[in-house]
Length: 160
Image (cartoon, rainbow, N blue to C red; front, side, top):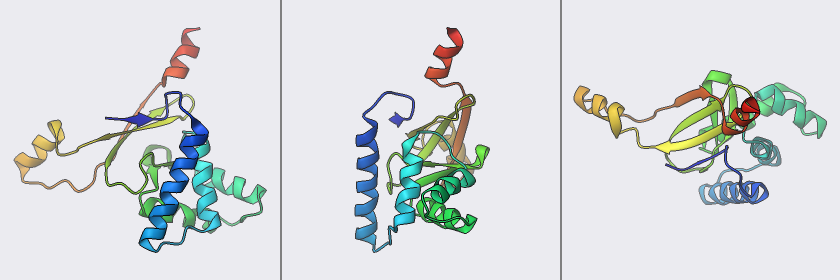
């Protein structure tokens, strides 16, 4: 399993690589990666934390890219539908996907203090869930697991 969100990394490279991957995937699939969609993804990538649609809309409004909720929701719908972002159901918010466009089963670890989100990938057909599904004759197509807790940075802050 690999994750991103809690560890220190080259953040500008992280943003650049993700935007480039999404741009390439859109070109390959004939999808329109409009300036608003690109900017919404950039906003999500700026911080590895969950953002609500209205938080995103506020930033778009400040930049003159739109002031009505459908602007943000349409961009978010496109990003989620195409595997470039995920909706965090627990928070009714969104995060950029750390492996955009790849088919995977993410597990989200959400810090209840700072809203940082780490995305870890797993195989839902393995482990207890996979065994239970197999026993029931069930074919897992999609899973979403969200765990709430405290990230390493906030744990350190609490210990100080």
